[in-house]
Picture 1 (tube, rainbow, N blue to C red):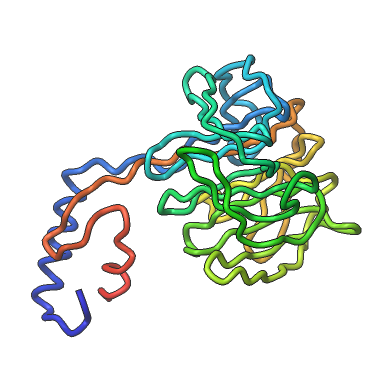
Picture 2 (picture 1 turned 120 degrees about the horizontal axis):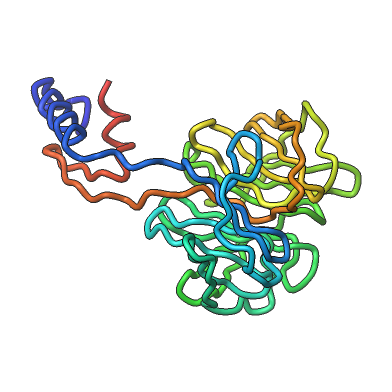
Length: 274
């Protein structure tokens, strides 16, 4: 609906939106933070603010596990063991292999809002230190852009900045934080400030309730990271070194409003109504 349409049309759209919202229960958004141990074993729920263990799902998810990510479309949790893509059951910890990455050694995963999976490779294997699109049906990867850094690569999509992935890694002398434009491949460096990151970063995840990123380092220390590069250490150290981090994602609910817009992406509607 454009601004040129009548005010009465806008009011009808607003009234219908409110009515629909009052009938359909709003799904929980990112209230559960899943964590998978580096190289396998523990699969748990951890506290979003402190990184402390909250609930144990399984202690027998064995494998060379790295990053995890949950699809915002299907609600399926995916995991990488560096060489292949898997699904990971959030109730049992059971894994099912989908397929190999074809020589790329994928270290961390993230989904965009449309359900496209992305992965970042480490310093070894084909197409090292780079960002890839991943087919969730086969595990096949498509090279997108080379990234800076040579260790500790991790990525996270920020739904408040569509078309953008944030990348955290270790360089030769310091940690690297940068914004990657998925359309053009342009990379924008972001200076880090605040608390020091004391060892290589592991899985990065965006926390939509707090509006910032969270991650563990290789010694189990937990951090918050703002878009402007401000790092805040949680002050606690988990005895388990977690790599994979993923918040739960509600699946998109399909509702047609009177004005023709569908739920799941109302950005165009909300952007045009004052």
